[in-house]
Structure formats: structure tokens, C-alpha cells
Length: 443
Image (cartoon, rainbow, N blue to C red):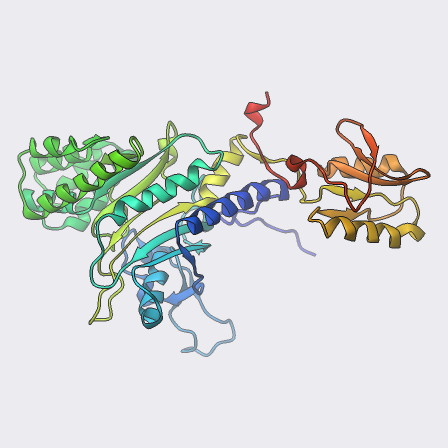
């Protein structure tokens, strides 16, 4: 067998860390369902034509898919989806006659992007999305509800302090048009790099793209405005730029911030540099950051899209946010902030001193499993000491023995060994299933 060469950008967890990821996924799923979101799953591939032209260099990031032995025109122009919003929009169009609007859905799936792998950026990763789509019109109150749902999920998880930054795409669009910069997409993409290259480089690139120095500096000034209330409106007005689209954006973002201030003070921050790279966003846009780790980039985001799902007769506007589960979990695990309490779901190892006792050991294990206790039987007969060491290496907290006095169970951490009846014995609730440990709290 040839030597295995790792593929960068395709992360794989060891079992102990996978427990952390699974716990995150379980909590997120349960929270989404508490808020009335229904689960769907879409296919992994979409026509490249549907995936492309969505901005953020999407064309370059799409993985094309075809069968190796296919004829030249078979399975042509299929690609793996790079997010879950584009396939969801297609799903809505395809099944609109069977859906009840407004339709609330959540989706937890893998996505693929052909970008350069680096910390926090992968070519295959898991996202957890929620979206609300309506037929014809979508009320703006959903733009406040979604960040509240995301915050509810994240607050149930052992994650550091976070903030959800919000903008409205109409604000920069209207501002740029008011300046006389009509190539809004180009300006947005340049300004979106301000954290990476700095304001002066952004000014330089805007001038190279055709802006005057004054126009470029005003665009950068707009990107520097932020607030945790509606005071951003006055700051924008002070720059002296006027346009009706700008007015719409300021009014809509003010409504979002006012409502958020009432229901979840401090959760949202209006940050006018937030744009999101995908071109289908038309209103509110969100980015989720870990406080003090903003340089790592966002761990989730989303926004409003008014025309992504349209069949020419009916338009289905929507708004959604996703949590970058792989990105978030890898960050916390790699920093040593989180780890699984053990590398297996097994809570009890049934010891085996002789192979002829295996049938009885399997009956004991089945009895314990029937009461919801994760159990496995020792792989081979061995001395008690060897079986305890086997359990210890895997983090299994209890070993079940058959003794002359009847069955006993040993807590291998404390050394305590007590008589036990498989019909009634239960481990402590904290040991029943693996959990997330936060090592820094145990030091």
C-alpha cells in the first residue's frame, strides 16, 4: 500500500474532538427546532450556471463534478455547492407548491469551496443555516428574529463572547451612488478588504478603479462608522452624501437596531464596513465575530436576499444566517479551549476473564443498553489490570466485573468498586454520555 498523503483543507477530527463537534451540532439543531425551523437537506450538486456569478470569486471556487467514465456531454456543468443558500433558493422554487409560507427552514450540511486552505478556511466544511422565505414580500422583523435565534444557540454552547455585526447593503450602495460611483460591486469588493490591507491601500485601489481621492476617502470613512444603537445615522449624514437608496438603507437598519436594542441589548453592532462578498444580498447583512479574535475573521454570517428565488412570476424573498460549525469548532479545539471528555460514547466496559463467559457478558451489556447506558464488551479475555488500562486509554469511566460475590462495577478514576445489578445500576448523569470539557476551567 502506498503512503497516505494528507489533503489540506479537508479537516478530519479525532474521535475525542468529533464529540465536541457533534455536541455543537446537537445543540444548534435543537435550538433551531425550538424556534420552529423545519429541517431539509438538499443535494450536493447544482448546475454550475446556478452556482456561478454570485460574487466573491464564486466561479473560481466551484468544484466541478463529473463521472470519470461519462460521455463528453453527460453530467456536464455540475458543481458542488459552495454554500447552502443558493441550493435552498432552488429548492424553494422547485417545491413552492408544497410549502407553506413564510417557510422556516434549517439545514446542516457539508459545503465545498476551492480556495487556498489556511487557518479557519477549508475546502470542505459544515455549515448550519436558518432561513425564512416568504412569497411576494418579506417583513423586516425577520431581520431581527434571525440573529436572536443564532444568539440563543451560541449562548447554550461553551464559546467565548461573540458579537453579531450588521449592516444594510443599501447603505453602501446608496452612498457610493450618491458619490457618483456607479460600479457598486467593484467598490464593495475593494472596501471589503479594508481589514486585510488597511484604509490607505483601499483608497489607493479605489483610485486605481476610477474614483477620485475624495470619493475614495469618503467611502473609507463610511466603512469606519459603527455603533450599538441608531447613532450611526447621524454619523453617515455628517458625511454630506445623499441618495434615496441610502435613505432606505439607513431607515431599515435603524429599525433592526432599535428592535434588537429592545429585545437583546448589546447583541447587534451596526458596522458599516460589513458587506458580505456574495452578490445576491440586497438588504441586511450579518457577520458573527468572537470578541477579541476579530482578526480570525467571522465564524458565521448571512443576510437578506430579495431576488435569488424567482420563477419570473413569483419572487420568494428571504433572509438567513449560518454558523460556520467547522470553522468555529476547529478554532476552539486548536486553541485548547474545548475537548471531549472521552474518545468514545462508551460509559461501561464489561470485563471478560475467560472467553466462555462472553455470552453472559453480552447479556449484561444488552440489559444495560436497554436502559440507555452505552456499553461494550471487552475485545478479548484478559486480566483485570489489562482491561482497566484498556478502559483508561479510551476514557471509559466504569468497568463491570463478575466476582464470586456477584457483579460489581468499578469507577477506575476513584478506584471505588461496589456491587451492581444490571437491572437497576446507572452511572451518574455526568458520566452517562461524553461531554465537552473546558480545560482552562479545570486548571
